[in-house]
Length: 286
Image (cartoon, rainbow, N blue to C red; front, side, top):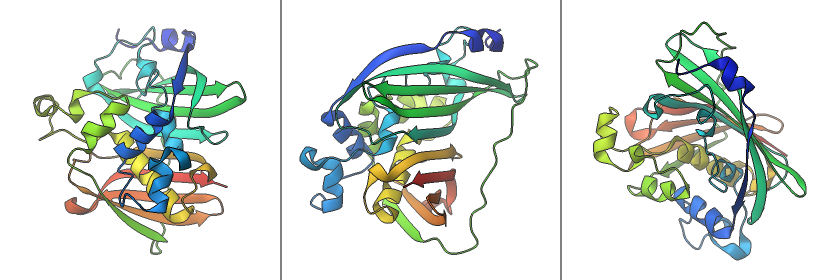
């Protein structure tokens, strides 16, 4: 059987050493579209090493490591990666990420749910350096066609309704035609984001943008507009992936201050009648 939940949950955590340097952070920020305008003082926080602040979403690519699909390389799980969809991503930040660092990342499968037509694999990564915990990341991966094994369905994800009021901020960010090609240099070399023939076999008219690139672009917009360009104030960020983005399109990011210390984001594609591509996106901050 491709998925054996008991075996996957009993597997020991995978531990690896990861490291990164300012060049990796700069490349990641450029992959999110940072640097326009190039001389803007806010943008220089992301693109100039002497002023470098690190967006917390960098944790999703830091040191590359096991990456988002690392939990699928686990005893008891043998699936076709083309059937895997990234459902949700959350990161909890224990302290601001340094521009240069070394850490130990420990990844484990913490749940396997049976949704009938699909299985959901929940994996968690804890990263720490010599000074203590840095971040905790948790992702839910939907594996199409691998449900029906008789396991628990797991709790349904709750959605947060958008406020009836106008957003506090509305930001539009263009996705460059080459943005997926640049972003993939931070570690995700899936040909789905670069090779037109591979994208066609997957059912897309052309390569799509990485979901985690959209995720990072939305966080940057929230930090720049609502948090005074201070990424170190972010304490947590989670979102649900609901649609694809094509290079060349425009993201419309609406931001509400829903309660003290929390921002709610809705991310849509402007050219496609505001099709939602990122939902239930919440930024927790100091």
